[in-house]
Amino acid sequence: MAIRYFLNIGVNWGDTANWSDTSGGTGGFSVPTNVDDVFFDANSGNCTVNASARTAKTLDFTGYTNTITMSNTVTVSGNVTLGAGMGIAGASALIVDETSTLTSNGKTWSAPFTFSGTSKTFTLGDNWAISGQVNLSGTTATTINSNTLTSSGNLTSTTSAITSGTTNISLTGGTWSNSSTGALRNNLTFTSGTITVSGIVRYDTNTLTYTSGTVTTTGSTLAIAASTTLNTSTLNWNTIFFGSSAVTITLTSDLYVNNITINLTANHTINGNNLYVSGNLNGNGISSGIIGTTNLKYIGTGFIGGRMSIGTSNFEVNTPLGTLTIAGDAGSISSTTVKYTAGNVVYTGSLTVNSVSGQTLDWIHNITGAGLLLGGSGNSTTLLNDIYTTNLRIGNNGGFNTTTNGFKIYCSANFTSINFNGNNLGTTEIILNGSGDFQFSFTTGTGALRNNLIIDTPGTINIIGTVRYDTGTLTYLKGSVKGINTPTLSIQASGTFINLNKLNVFSIVSITSGTTQTFNNLIQGTASYPTRVQCATATGTYTIAFQDTFEKIANNVKVSGCIVSRPGQLIVNGRNSNKGNNTGIRFGNQSPNGLPKNTPTIKTETIFGIGNISDPTMVIS
Image (cartoon, rainbow, N blue to C red; front, top):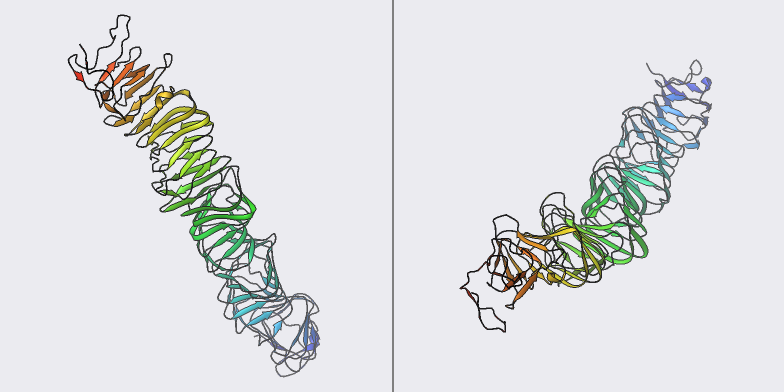
């Protein structure tokens, strides 16, 4: 049976002569242990905890008006009740290590206080104020329930265990820190005073709130491993770290943070108010990202990298005094609104924009470095201004589209289509106005470019490999165009082609059967580099239509499967130019005696009326 120890005279906790039992007798007792109830009352004198490892089952200071000096720790394995008129001195901790009820009676505990034990639940019988350090050190999950715990000293976790419960914890001063990996899950509020967030602090699940006070976060990291609500208003966090598992963050006020770091191959969701980032967005190179309904606004100096992707509702760069670097390993931006407002942007990687439903691209900054990549899967992107980029890549199983005010994309270096099965389409006009490569990069699939494309450059464009184009209008205006690796033009649907007769670069033009292609003049070849215009299927046919009714002449072209919409309008010259299955083509004289070497594709009695030709109607016999 436990003994009820009363402090009789005092001086030292460890002196047996200081203790009496409930009958008031003295002597004959040892120092209390963890099975003994200990009482300090109005008759108890000053007491100094004079040696370590002092213990009690319960500790009750009701009516005590003198002072206990915590020169060493006291561990209590049960309830603790403070006295409203007691004095507290010393710098050693009062430790509770067993499920219990803790009652302060309005007294502020000025020495350290430690929540310890294995899977213990501590219930606050009333509000607690602790001006010494609060230590969270339970070896497994610790629960603190009811009322409010106000800490004006330090709050630190020294365990890998979780601390949770219904108690609201309020910080009014000191340092918040973790020396281990345990997270705090009680509601936590910064309410006043001067607070320092130090090192890596771990918080999640409930609500973290800032209302007032001066909070310093320099060099610190807020690690969040479970879904959490943040209501930290104007407080600026140094780094927020997401790891372990995908989480959802709910912002009930704007969130300001220097850096966001993710260490998980997954997207984390941030919903609610605006997110302002002034430093780095780092995915740690593992294809991670941020999605959700929040608007992410970049306002400082730093980078997007480590394969970090952004899929928040809106993404805006507005950093008049800062510089954002879009790094070589940056991920994609899949926001509904992608906008540049102000600031310096450095592109060591590409600005990658993946289309989502209703997306607008409002980017008036000249995109340099690796340039712009437009991708997506079946959605459309509406341009709100002209886009200027050094390099342009489009594709990835989808396409982009715009219907707004005829804005254009100007590409001053390389253009590459990297789509596999989808078609890039839309009303956006793409203008190649610099020197670089024009190529399609496929491993599988037959996707094609369908946007209007103009080559209008004072430089040199190299056409490499197979180019897939249809539906839109492909126009050559000026510039040096060279063919690399015997390029092929693959036309998979009806399209329009202007001035391609001036290029002389394609080895093969392959046209899908049943389609109609409109030219102002047919593609030309050279004597040493003739062009083969043919149907994509061996026995199929396609139709060539010209924009006007003038006679057209194509040199050094070999044609098969071609139907000319106006029979007789096209004359094809070149060695072995008729490769069969053609209709309406006149093959020019190829012999000194004026006779063609190939069989004409029209009957000799056919009469052709070719508009806008000055000669009389011709009869071929």
